[in-house]
Length: 343
Image (cartoon, rainbow, N blue to C red; front, top):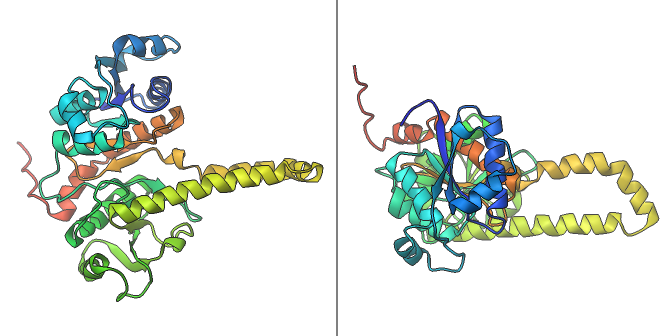
């Protein structure tokens, strides 16, 4: 594979708004990055129909025909094994084969997680790949590791989550020496269940990360840490509550501002400031959630992802590849000896 381009495969059939939004997001990403190549995976005639709406660089966009679609409710492992001509399986295989550097999908989370491990595979030495979304806080984004891939994690896995999260956060956001915290029910070291009690001293002793101790869920939105580590059960609860509360508050604010003539006048006055604040807390601006620790990058976006989220997820893949983050995992975590450079 030529190093001229960063090559990203995009699932054109996955998600509630496919193929319209994935195709649009891919075209927008190509406009931004001249050294980006995109492969749209899905039913060719459907994709071509959508592409007819746009002007795009044909030399940097290709279509891989995939006839099947994995539905959200299908058993993930069975779907990966039986629907080999699905857009998710074909896209993941492009990464496995090295044809593409990364794969972006808004499709089935379960199938994406299962396929990431079964088809793409883990970097040697990585115990479990976590799903790690960026979330907005009062002080900038925070990386939540894990939010859905490993419901029953071990302490050694949480340590790897912290290491990968710290490397990823530093490279993707420019935060030097990011603060790493362990999700717990209290700040004290002796609190928590067996998993966090075992993990805490391991993180304290772990070189290469800036471990600041425990963090309670209420302190996450305030920006008290840059990387938040937990098992997927706790992480998924945090993520879903985060998203649900944000959506509820936005709707309540809008209802309040439209409740009377006086509030409507006030809304006009504060509209610019409010719009800027809401933009800072727009989770779609961060792209999708990467599976960290795979041999190639897999990024899962929201099921209802619009073009801007798809575009930002592709941008994630571009930066990830350019900064060789997988290579940094290997080197900084001591996973395997780097290969000697060829003369």
